[in-house]
Image (cartoon, rainbow, N blue to C red; front, side, top):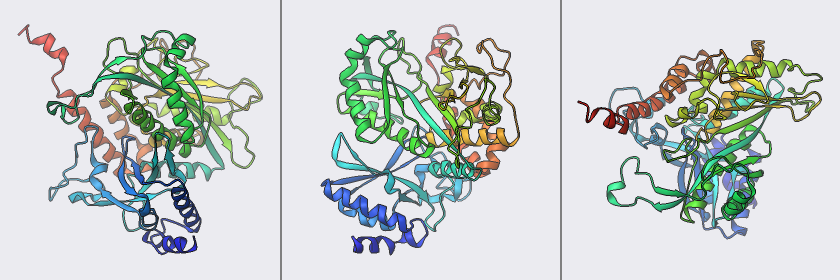
Length: 484
């Protein structure tokens, strides 16, 4: 063990200041765990700008080298839209390329030993999540895990910490045709053909749960095997729609948990001939949109006191300011909570999804649902704005940035609403383009994350919007092909 630690300590990650003495011990422990479990492979991964895990697989015997030196990956992985197209001119002598990442050079993946997980569905293999560095010791400004870490540290400098709880909706269908014929290998690939596992519209009914219990059990056991703090498995409203909820945790832990959850659910289901999707609103008959509800409370680091807990019905200073900040910056934050073209089709009235920038007490139609009671240590707010496809690191960081700004500016939450769909309040952005424009013009996010990151993310999302609105739709074909 001593020789192993010395090897790690002599590696380039330690020399660059990307791994400290405590990290040497953690890395050595992971190597010992891998040997004890007779692991064959390690999937070394980072979360890209879309919240998708990407990376390389190494043999388990290469773990010491990984911890000593990290592993390189092409920088173009950070420059792609959701079709996997590189949207920056990396081969041109001129033209703006984010971070100077021209020529498809390398980025450095820096493993975090705390994220090591043996895979319950593939027990000879394990996951190891990474941060991204530039190769000379600086963390990449496009590492979304690093962006969240910076936000958490800034909150901690104020003596505060955010606690979050997850409620995540998704669909699981039976796969009829995986579309693996050559003609379907487009970019992106043609979607699989599926059918429902249940007819739906039996919200929280016992018979529906029993019918879906085999799938629920496999996914619950998978979550438990990964160390995800799953609390409940629920039948949602729509056909083949599930909801999983999780115990509270700190933002970084739950951001890691979210990317692991989405990836694990998709992989476990795929091995059983099923198709799981966290797409917000699938284009399927009778499908119901899925949301992602984020519970939040603010903690005093010294005392452990919940700063949203009050002695009376009124909101505390911190709770009022946090809510006000989330509302004030809701439009520009939507690119982070709702990053896809599809997600904006969920913002419909009377559908248990928000469509206006309002808050209400225990009101599931409001964007912010406030769940505070006098002397209740579980007092919290629930932001119902996000889609399940959001990058969790950026989503959580946006809550911290906006909430901190509300408190710092001594904002006060406006009056609560009881009729969120009829309130005379600003609507949420109606499209991805509107969200891009709001984020692009945001002084708050430019100050918090820098012009480089804001411009980078807007270019990627605008490339997706351009492909979407330049595609001739079935609506256009039906509307005009026969008329003109």
